Image 1 (cartoon, rainbow, N blue to C red):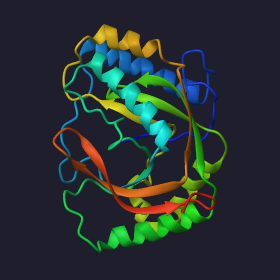
Image 2 (image 1 turned 30 degrees about the vertical axis):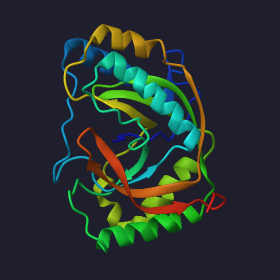
Image 3 (image 1 turned 45 degrees about the horizontal axis):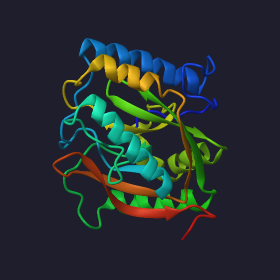
Image 4 (image 1 turned 90 degrees about the vertical axis):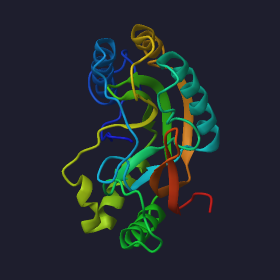
Length: 247
């Protein structure tokens, strides 16, 4: 799950980035994540439960080429972190969250009123703007896992997020008091001890500025998450193309 979204763009993710904006935010996460991993106090995820995380959300799925690249990096990260963690950068799971709408529900019935309203809001918000373009540059470490850093190429990403909140109206309540300050895709969620903590910190540090290309998101998704026995995976409920996206 994504937890942050940015309003101030910085072109770099790694330690060489600017002192403010994206660079500083990802630097702070790396410092916190490194300390937690080395101390063994990092967060350990467990399968979603009703009322917990991994609820109904609107997300940006990376384009097919980016999905392949992120899956390859995920496999590399998992080889260092250890095989028991969730590979949430794999094709069935990878995403950049725009907004979570509620806590987890294990069952979302057909015709669910919130899904119907949110899907309509999603379509209106997406139709009013262009496809979202994000440069994927650099990895960072957090107390919860390994992230790929996303940097908007223009105002489309933040514009869509703002329109979505407005179109949702009262249904935006779940994150009304929560400000997302970066865009990212979590590639690995920790679920237990890290195999070699120092090696993982060094591995991520060496990739703070790795170039992962640009992703062009032609359509946003409303989805829920289902645990497939290995990790939470995306279960799309509605898809909304952007104004000039592929329909």
